[in-house]
Length: 153
Length: 153
DNA sequence: CGAAAAAGGTTGCATTAAAAAACCAAATCA
DNA sequence: TGATTTGGTTTTTTAATGCAACCTTTTTCG
Image 1 (spheres, rainbow over the protein chains, first blue to last red):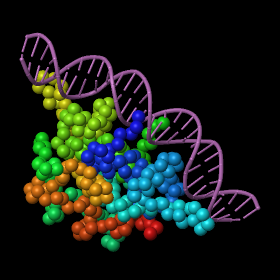
Image 2 (image 1 turned 90 degrees about the horizontal axis):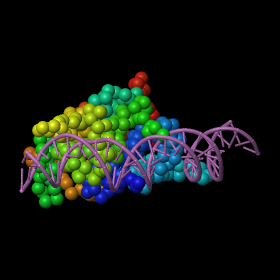
Image 3 (image 1 turned 180 degrees about the horizontal axis):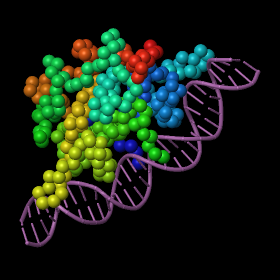
Image 4 (image 1 turned 180 degrees about the vertical axis):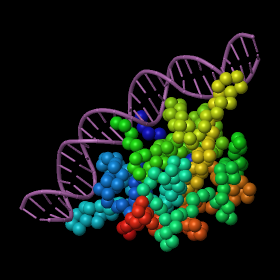
């Protein structure tokens, strides 16, 4: 059974999940944000099977999230690096991290701090144009005609 | 082959992906944020197979992301609602939406606006305690001993 | 009230993806 | 030069996905 495609769902979230929504892709990206670039380092850092890692890396390259750079002296020795598109997932990764720490406790040996001050980061939140924090109840989903979709509750 | 567990990776992101990291879960959550509560509405809204929807909903309930409420008049008729933990994924969902719109164009028929002003939302970003926007290069990953992990580049 | 339809699943089957391990060629190290 | 590392591919086994059919309880509607 072919994996259901999310492209044609008419939904940006679905479209994003199509590119980075499987079990491993976002972990590969997080590992890359941590500084990992080499195939073996991804493998050791994540405990992922090599064939799956191959598949994910090439899919991420195809989608423009990472690039494969030949760094060999006399042949092919590769590095995988985040593109701007990949680095732009930073907010998603940090938001996920923080959510997990808030609700499941800190299972992580690593901490994320501001490089210049050493202080912890602020929680990632949704804000309006004035910088006010918005919850799901403070937003409206409007369709292509500008008509608001009624939300129960 | 048992699906690899991400719990014991010692990583908060992995732990989060364990709960909401598969193809469908986050879409179910997004649909719930849109106001959907009934089984058939999730099914029609997402085009998901019923057995998969059953599995995802009960897993989300098990993980405390949603609750199943009996709303039957004379028996059992269920609604699935987000918990506080589930609603707290708002920033993750919006960040994913915005990322997809930025890099893949707006594939979505729906827009997300501030309810009180009708204006679009601000981009979801990572900030330090002073509200300054941070990129991946502005943060440091420190281990349990407070030692910074060297990042190449 | 009674019949029909809808809600909320469960089951079985065919197809696909994931995990692990073995294997392999090219490149680098000692 | 020889051993080892890197970056894969292939094979096999197991799990997950999608689809359709079926089933029971609850509403709805005449």
